[in-house]
Length: 407
Image 1: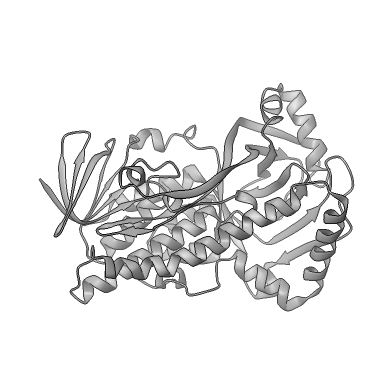
Image 2: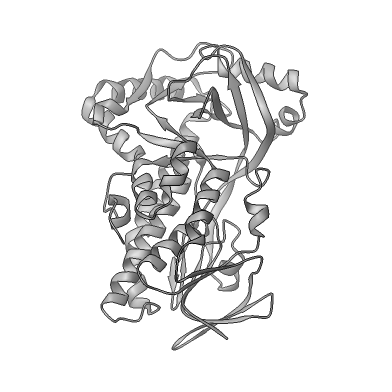
């Protein structure tokens, strides 16, 4: 039987940073992932991009991941938020964020998920105290007074003081442990595609609120942007089935002409959109992190940042307990993590849900009210700067890693 201090189920973009932080703090960590590493690193595995807040960049820098990721990440210099209708002029009211106003080089960075995964795997490969078992998965988990015993699909048994589920929204391990979630599906589908355009984007990210949902244009390296298009789920299949000419026409209708001629480059992807929040983040010798604990609407681009903050906070709580000689799997140690992260997760999940409901409609009184709200926030400097700090993940009680310090 293999022995470890901590066993993590899920070797994705939350599980691996968490494993790195814990291993760098001196704990022995095993990560189990169901997907073969070669499949995970294939460009066809995940066509999405992620917005990395500058607090998340500080964390990845402290973990030794950012150095190899930075050349593939595009800084966000400005964000422009507008409200309108497809094919019609945007509202005269808008919200403009500029990194220079808060003395920052960038409000965040956009990176393709495939590059984030590659950088994480490179960092893991050279990390002592950390082993990845893949492809494999936890078939059963037994919680005992002194630890937990996991039985893997491969037949291997692992004993650990604590097991952490970081295996995604549909977490099999969360279900095995009987942790209940509250949530619902949105009547929307997320369409993702890479777009090539004639003019440089200059690091500006655009978020257009359309009646069907937000239409985000996120700057990537080169003259490329990532399109994150929220559409009515009944209409999405027809859009995805369009030929190249038809899809590019629909794209141009919503994209506008500010970047010159545009065309999609590469495959189109689609994802169902939903909301969920786990009723418990911890049990004795068991904890949830990332999408296992919460799933939010992508309207603010904060999903990965929320998961990375989980990883940073959980690593800090566990390493503090270990340094004091306490049992890292005991419920009193884990409750500190739950208190720290549950309210923040709920607050962000609720606010993104409310924003989506407020903006994803064409009700005239609401449209006038929200347009006025955008204009008011844009005209009040302290309010505008607060929202910029929020977008950068730089508010509230930050874990040490998100300050750029060792966990």
